Figure 1: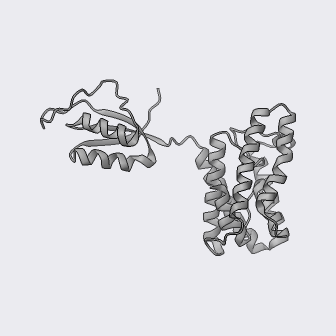
Figure 2: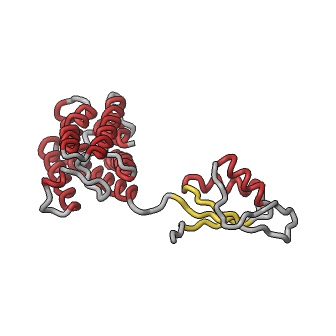
Figure 3: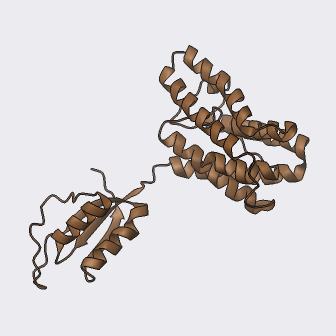
Amino acid sequence: MASFGLDMFLVPNGFIAGGMTGISALASQLTGLHTGMFLFMLNFPWVIMMFQQSNRNMAIRAAAGITVFSFCSLLLHPLPPLIEGGAAAAAVGGIFLGFGLGVGIKYGAVLDILIPASKIPSPVMAILNRLPLSNAGIVVHIVVLSAAGLLIGLEQAMYSAVACLMAIETARLTTSSIPLKRQVIIQSHYPQEIKDSILQLLGRNDISSHPSGKADRQPDNLQDPLCYHIHLMEISRLKSLVRRIDPNASISVSPIRHK
């Protein structure tokens, strides 16, 4: 996802982003070489530094993430942009880039060694240890975008700032504590049929504290509710499955409450 945003929207239009990804994109603009090559070459010295500082688990994750990011960027580099120029290309590219970086951060991978995140301690931040982490990140982005303004033009730098802002905000939202799952309570006359269907088609088990028992088809004899923790992307499908069995079923969706 990160390389898709970078190489299908930003780089072909002459836009960049912040961090080492932006430096790599800027180097690609100036030299005409593949962005993926610079992603690999510029990030890996810091990976070696992490390994030498005995942060080996992080170094392995960083090496894996950066290698995959660079390889995907090399694969996508020859393709034409999906959107030609303008703020739309910068915004969409920034969203895809930020989403890919954010997912990597959330699950412990490293795609950009200079992207500051609370969940990933970086030895690079030791160089900027007199600044708060957020300010250090701002300094990095300002330096990269300023260099872009001097080297590739003010207009391209302005669109690059849009891409950088969208990438930062998307990564922040992706790594935030917003849960991706919801609690779904289902009240139906046919709980067993619904349980079997959800288990078979979605692979989810009822987590209610009391089993619903056998379904009773008497309309005035409502069964105990079913409870599921369902990913946001699966809620529409779950509702469709339930409505197909019982069009009158009650379905309530709410945030998961942790005790």
